Length: 237
Image (cartoon, rainbow, N blue to C red; front, top):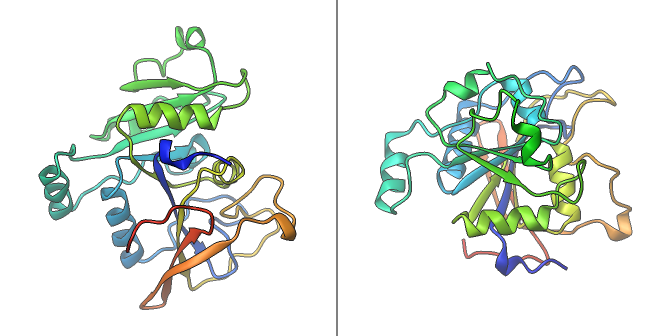
């Protein structure tokens, strides 16, 4: 069992269709959430020190969600935080287009990879990120415990996870997720190959992580569900 007192507090924030898909079968950018969902997401990001997402998510959108609300920025600054949280891209392959609009957004950009630093010497990504983090078990896998310890050492106490499903699966397996915020949107996407919030090999029912429902809120046609992991140390709400 991971000692979560020495790791950032981690919240997965995702919007899903009513049948539990985070994108359609073509893996198109998921923009089916309403303005209320976008406002909710921005609020959650503003309460975080950093945002983590996979290279696949970046390839789908080309950009990331940054804080645009003046009020939320001012609240962060009153707490002594920078206007924008660090945006951390996780990539094992380093297959990221350096011309994405993401690299022109006014945000701190970090890269988390398992590749050795020398592999970046001739890579066009080398100078695209403000900080490079190497957390490798080997050249193919990220050591998540080591990665999270590095993040904590860098002052990241609250971490938002925005996907994709493979990263969420890996973090659940490593016992590094504390909370979920799921927005259930009023549409059916279907498709056996459509992405879901948790990918990977899955869990048998007897060993599946168990959740505790903390909050439920309905706004318009969407339902906002806040869950905590039963074995997690949950913050007061």
